[in-house]
Amino acid sequence: MGEFSQNPNGRRPTKGEIICRAIAIPILLFALACILFEFYLVVRGLFAGSIPTESTLFVVGLGLGSVGIGLIAIILALRSDRIIGAIIKTMTNLEFGSKSVGVTDDTEPAMVQKSMNQKKDISIDYKNWYTSERANKFLIENIGKSGIPLELRVRKILKDNGFQVTNARYFEPAGEEPELPIGYGQGTWRELDAHASRSEKTFIRIGKGEIHFTTHILAECKYSTEKDLFVFEHLDRENADLSGFPLLVNGQCILPLFPAKHFRLPLLVERVTEIDHRSASKEKGNYSDAITHDACEQILSALRFFLSKWREDVRKHYLNLASASTIAGIWDALRKEGEVPYKTFGPVTKVPDGFINQFLEKNFKPEMLEDFPYFAIHIFFPLLVMDERRGIIRVNLNESYAVTGLQDVWSCLYLYISENANCYEGVLGNSFVLPVLMCNLSNLGRMLKMIEEGMNQVIEATRLYTTTNPHLVLKEIVFSDRVTTSR
Image (cartoon, rainbow, N blue to C red; front, side, top):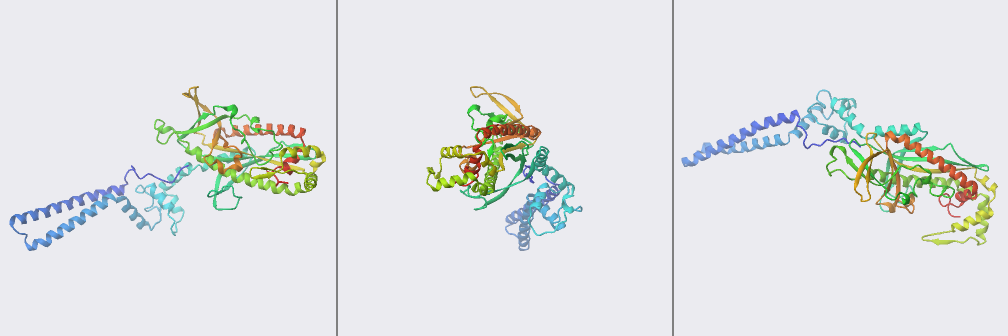
């Protein structure tokens, strides 16, 4: 992301500063000459045996004047930039960028930043500041670096692929209680670059009911003109923790186990480092994961908000239907008779999953599905998109972990582990891993195609699973703690 800033250290002095310093040098030389003349008078007087009275006041006055002139010269030389800035502000009455004085060759972009950031009660016509040549050039360059154009291009590609795209505003709780319900406690509203959602055309029909699927993408865009990502493949792909890919709002009871296996996943990555192509030979500023880390933390925090919100919305939507269903009536009668066992699992007391399965297998009838004519499953994919000029480069290692080469890859799945994983139990569950898809803009369409093909495979596998076990649909809606409260 670009910033409106200039480094004052090492910049070229402006014309005004050069003039101030040119004036200061002869003044300083004149002051030194006066001091030498004063010294000459004192020495002459000492050799003569006395200093004439009429000369005393002249000597003292000349000495004080010389010191004052010298100080003025030094201040003028060392603070010429501030003096010029004060003169410009006085002449323009704080009207930055006017054609008469405004932003000229004598004013630096640093003054643009300072003027833009000042929060004073001043009235400035917008045409008087942004249309000046220097300010206009500065703004065009830095708005481009801000990443907003990249964000808009990502949004367009998502829309072209059938997604509805909205702002991804989320609430980030403060302090040590991140799992507080949405809207409670102190915190800050933040924004991720895009939340895209699409209802998949393929759905499952069971009896008179339908199961639909909605794909969600939470995308963060990172613009950089310098840094590329160098990634290290997960060394044990077969045992990599992919339990969090994709992330489910609901549907755990009716989706097949390990839905990740239905996706043609890109390179699995467990380590990322960023290298600046301008200074690749230097360690300073390189070999860290600052940009990637910040983006993944933003995505993780946004997921905590959105998953919690959607789970609560789904629970409320189906709560009344579940309570009024035929299977719920049979369950309530059994519970009143004391036939439902409750066991304590850590801090939670609930009915064992095996007992629920036995109950449903015994009491299920196909017509019970008519109580739920429509059911939607929501699935989230976290995504990090970079500018198309930045690459993802695989670092190849041999069995001794020595680097043997580099390879350009179109995308990767980064198995990110947050140092704050304990604060995201609602997202990560029992895992510490958040799988994040990563690609650059030129490969975003290919990434969306991979997601679409994987979702079609998941839907087909779910169709086979629910056709064989239709009672699991009732388990998902009536008994899943992700959909309704414990019955």
